[in-house]
Amino acid sequence: MKLQFLGATGTVTGSRYLLSDDKHRLLVDCGMYQGVKTLRRRNWARFPVEPSSINAVVLTHAHIDHTGYLPALVKNGFKGKIYCTTATHELCKVLLPDAGFLQEEDAKYAFRKKFSKQNATLLSFSSCDG
Image 1 (tube, rainbow, N blue to C red):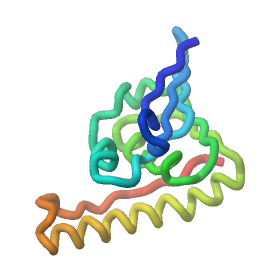
Image 2 (image 1 turned 180 degrees about the vertical axis):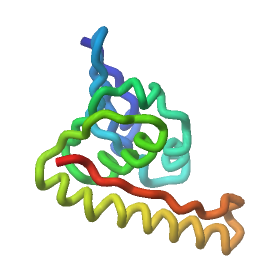
Image 3 (image 1 turned 45 degrees about the vertical axis):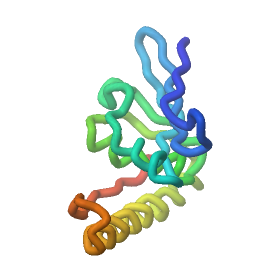
Image 4 (image 1 turned 90 degrees about the vertical axis):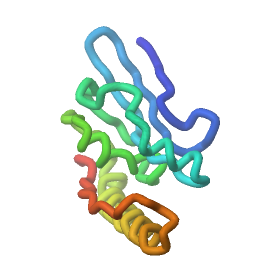
């Protein structure tokens, strides 16, 4: 069994831990980096492993720094199951779309005020399976 720290290293945000053996890859948490710009930029970096190679994700809880990268993981090829408690699932159904909306609004504002050259792109945020 191998443990890799794919996030939350040198910071408390962006929780992502990969447990793997010769046949399986299990991602524990799939968080976004939050906070200062240097941390937030990590959200745009290529994921350290191929998302399609991950068999499943287990969420410890619903905070965005533990779940917020799920939509990007799915967009980039993850097709496995997502496991979480019923409470975490219920919270993800509220938190993930809300976080996506806030990010879109921030991007539109930055583009309008010309402190970002990126045009705001609408994203689709999915919730975790219960």
